[in-house]
Image (cartoon, rainbow, N blue to C red; front, side, top):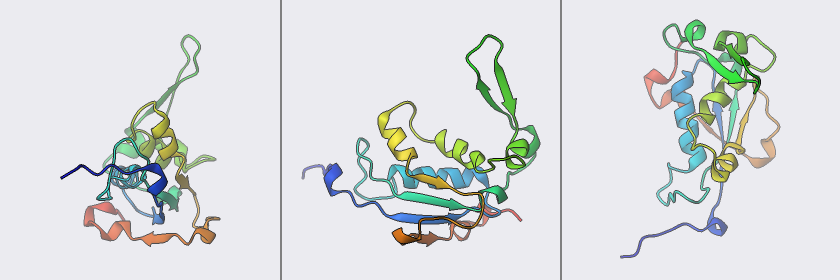
Amino acid sequence: MKTYSAKPADVVNNWIVVDAQDAVVGRLAAFIATRLRGKHRPDYTPHVDLGDHVIVINAEKVRFTGRKMGDKRYYRHTGYPGGIKETSPEKILGGKHPERVVELAVKRMLPKDSPLARDQFSKLRVYAGSDHPHEAQKPEAIDFKALNTKNARS
């Protein structure tokens, strides 16, 4: 029996909507990264982009477990000597772009520094509120919190 290898021309990408209200960030990011990579499909091929387009709504209402909201740190470097900057999820969620918490979590769960990873990450759309402009694609709503009781915090 021969091993099946998916071809990029044969791929059909679906659209899904995930509501992030009261969802645990790490579990949500792992679920989204799996869908973006296409690992949920039986014809998964590592070098082909089989993933779905994922729309995340209510990203400003995500939850962290334990004390991560105040203790967790995100680091970045400006490129200049001594230019390390840090911030916390609490500051990001209270700031101008609260959807970046979900984006950072998902980006760090995808493969590093490859054109395939950049293509997969570009299929993610995160919105802070409950509205999104992708109704024309007829996305399928997935109830992420109903998949496991640990996926949601109140």
